[in-house]
Image 1 (spheres, one colour):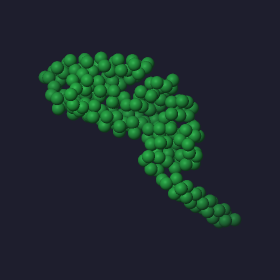
Image 2 (cartoon, rainbow, N blue to C red):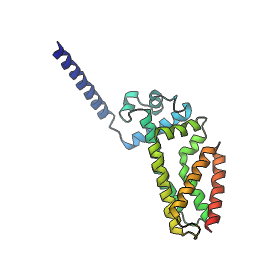
Image 3 (cartoon, rainbow, N blue to C red):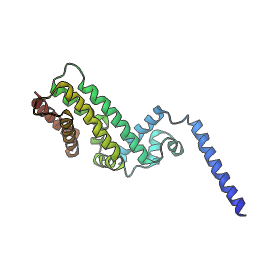
Length: 214
């Protein structure tokens, strides 16, 4: 009797595994473009309901797919949020480097453009939603390792640029100065109540650093 029960369980597991494989074939697999669409929809759901109240059903509905199809791409809500944060940070590093190296800019203009690029469109949208503070807190709790790595990457990008333009003797380490600036930007973001507050603070910081560098 026990042997038959074990065989039944094994058969059920095999069928479930086949079902997932068949569904994945029909869903054409986790393509980057499909996942990007899901992440875009997920952010809209997070912005509308907040991180805690958003369910996988909400995200699937926003993405126009079934809940089972959503699980083919992401394990759970935290996995989606981490993927959303990771995508944002990758784009952030590229945009910061491009902003600093745009020709024809003054030091102040380059720094301000870099600060805005560090925020990215995601931060703009977060600060524009009533759940902005919760989403920022969720990012720190759900992806602290990604935040730490992204902060270091941002400082590296800024540090390389500062090293290339040359520093006055009062700033012997470009990397150390870059880390200080990135920390100041994090403080501005935490204290900002709106995107206007953030931009005003970033403009002042860019002006202050540019004058010190000159």
